[in-house]
Length: 373
Image (tube, rainbow, N blue to C red; front, side, top):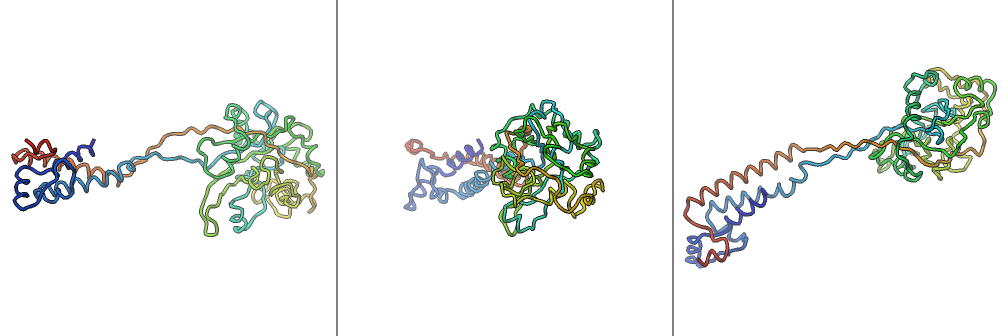
């Protein structure tokens, strides 16, 4: 409405009066009638010319900036919780934290150089935020309560296909529709520790505190994750996802993978450092990160876990927690100030034009019909 009114007044100011036409004919020149003419604008009276210029200049910011003054903001989440479990986990199946993987959240992981990160287009390749092993001893701890809440509520979440799940959570585009995630593994009977792991006597004594050796466990792994995308000097965009390894972000076949592999079915890619922490054979002391609860030197330096060599996780589908999207409106104060100032200028100009022309006694000839009267 403001622009339409401004265009009308510019047409009025662009139209000559009978007196201005007579003066132009006396000088041997002419006016255009019934058309918007820049030529007319600079041949009418000085008052009309300056008012026409004021309306013209004040229209430019409104045309360019008005739609940019108020805008919708796009929220994208970065933190989310990942649980790897069977379908029975959602239906009350027994589970024993930290899970059948015998891996606490944020377990020790092989460290890569920054060059390796950039070459893969990925940043932090890991198993999420670290948790103390003592957290899994206490049923009232936040870690255990998060797992229990997920088991109770995740069945009502939205089901995603494996491919859709991978695209949304691994590609690092931000979370717009979902947040927390349960990866459903095709393992209906769960995992029995004694069948998947052949531990030494001292290793058995340690893990008996957490995971029974002969009971099905429908929880495999649980952790808190963060994803961000950032630009680095050596790479255009690097995806920093703290759960990339746990979610098969490096695997050649993302939905059939070994939890402890760097990728594919190549056994040489096995991340022995992560697996060594599980069975206590690592020379690196992770008790500095896990509160001294786990002595990494109680086993020999060789791999003693006996994890079956063909062990793979086959992802069946995912359950994703819908993210409640709240529409946020953004406002640019500077743009709004500029647009408001232009509207004020137009309003003042229109009022001034109305008063001056109505008292001048010189009717503008806006249409050819006006000129024929």
